[in-house]
Amino acid sequence: MHGHSRLGRTKSGGLAGTSSSSSKSTCSKFVFLLMSAIFRRRGLLLFAPLFYISGMLLYMGSLSFDVVLVQKHPPPLPGSIYTSPQLFHHLWPFMEFESDTNNNNATSTNLLMKVWNVKEDRQWKPCANRTLPQIEFPKSNGYLIIEANGGLNQQRLSICDAVAVAGLLNATLVIPLFHLNSVWRDSSHFGDIFDEDFFIQSLQKHVHVVRELPDDILQLFDNNISNIVNLRVKAWSSPAHYLKKVLPELLEMRAVRIAPFSNRLAQSVPSKIQGLRCFSNFGALRFSEPIRTLAESMVDRMVKLSSQSGGKYVSVHLRFEEDMVAFSCCEYDGGAEEKHEMDIARERSWRGKFKRKHRIINPGVNRVDGKCPLTPLEVGMMLRGMGFDNTTLVYVAAGKIYKEQKYMAPLKQMFPRLQTKNTLATPEELAQFMGHSSRLAALDYTVCLHSEVFVTTQGGNFPHFLMGHRRYMYGGHSKTIKPDKRRLALLFDNPHMGSI
Image (cartoon, rainbow, N blue to C red; front, side, top):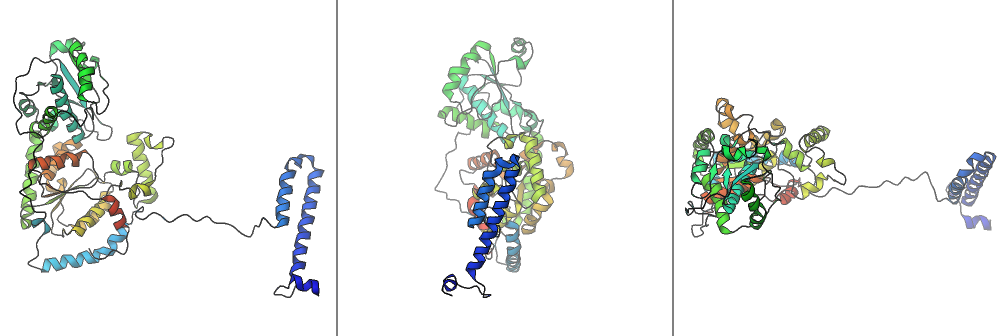
């Protein structure tokens, strides 16, 4: 009894120590039989150490098949998952109530009537005078040929840089060639988008510009422009580099070619060169006559439609095209279908760039870092949260929106008076521009240029040029909304957000 009391009893009245001894005895017999079998079959001797260690661990009770450890994944970072549709579903009743209240209130005023007051005491100085000093320059050192690539405003940037480089080298600039880009897929030439005559005339006292190479120069290269030496200039090259490396080649060959010419001039240049670059953008580049005619009509229509807000309207540059969503490597609410479509889009436009070794795609981190394009829904919630009500006239500048019917529906629900180029212009008016993304972007650019408030959602050349152009036109007092997408990611991930 004394020995039994030291071991203690189980709930069933059996002896705990006896049960344990029986279990160990069984394990011992199992190990003995297993080892005997192994030694009878010499081929299994190689596994003897493994079986022995496993048996001992079982015997000692270190291994148990009754317990399975499950590793728990850490919770997602706040703002890393796209939950905006759920938030909109929660907030929509509050928006409807606010809209009904404003509609019944005869004294309510649209936010556009009192948005940011102009501070008359603060005047910005333009980057260049409207007219640069006209000087007589010496005989040209040769012909500069550049190839502009990318979309509308990437091409615009290349043109302005080319004018600046031509002025720096005292070269004659040949009207730039446009490269057919694999993403934009627009076959337009310079004269299809910009007013060629106006460009040449505006710069005639500052830089030599010609439509094409003279025959005598072309004959030096067997009448083939591809035979002209193509100088590989690094991105953001300094004026000193052009004077040291490009000018000698220009003087010797009488014509040089630089292709591609995207971002090939440093941002920091002498004021004279910067003034020339600035003047070419705001003073020499204007859209071709067909684009100008329709764009001006579209602006007039927006002003008439916004009569209750004094002819003022909001423009939004929305970057939610398929290629932008694919390039961002962000995830939304499309599941496996969306992932499959994005993989195809990435491979089609960037051919293996996103499959390179060590390339890590982390959509959640991208969202938290503010790198994901805002959806139309998120733009709408942001504007409603800022106080723009459902009477606000909104113009959306965009390419073909990814899954447009699905993603545009909530934005139109929040702003029923929303307009795009497809609703503002007739199919007959747009017919001549269809299939040419840069010409269509020029229409959007013009309507946004004359809006009271411009909203940029993703960065890029379009908003950067537009913000600068608006500041230049309005003495620095253009009104721009540039959201903090890191903060928005956290706000949109809050399901308990109250009334907007």
